[in-house]
Image (cartoon, rainbow, N blue to C red; front, side):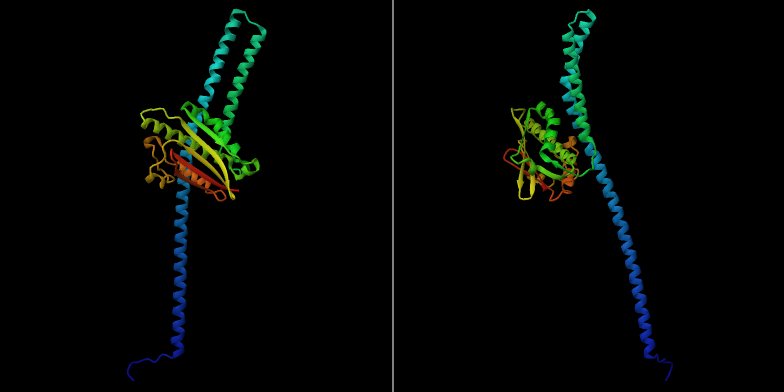
Length: 292
């Protein structure tokens, strides 16, 4: 028979079962290791993405703060001038000891009214800038009207007319979300329109161009569409497909390239939320959609 060893069949079967079990255990261990590694990588990637989003939001807030400061300065100019002028009259009358009690009371009342206006302005902008996280039912038209009240002075200074219209009833204008977020998007679009109109004027060698921004709210099935349209000349075709990319800007060194990106990220959280950009005959148009 030589040196051949005969292994009984049941030993072969048992050996095969043990090897299969060992292979199965090794595969499971390897799978657990891979899953843990993937989870760690995903967690790290999520952490980096969230940090990047946070930095983008901070940068966008800084840009908003600049617009807010400009608006406050414009809204305070007239009442400050009035205060300075009236305070001078009161001071002169008191120094000369020649004043009429009714005139003095009228002037002081006027000064108090101007101070109250300035206080209300600061409070209004302070509420706008607060980072509210509350979700509520709110009137979209009222939220946008507030933005126009706060920032129309900047548009007027640049000879830009802002027109807002809707034929919808109040009940049709109520959505669920954060009014502060919608206002931030509206501000970003208004300031982009302002820059586009000013740039178009510059390219026309400062020829007369009446700036115009229109805002409409329309209902389409179960969606509410907020439409911003300007006459700033529109966007080049190769730009439209990238307009919502982070850090993409057409404003050279003056732009951050994050406003539209963040606006789209915000609106995507809403029911049926979406945002598109397109050109019209005279300028750009942005459509914000919110589900009802």
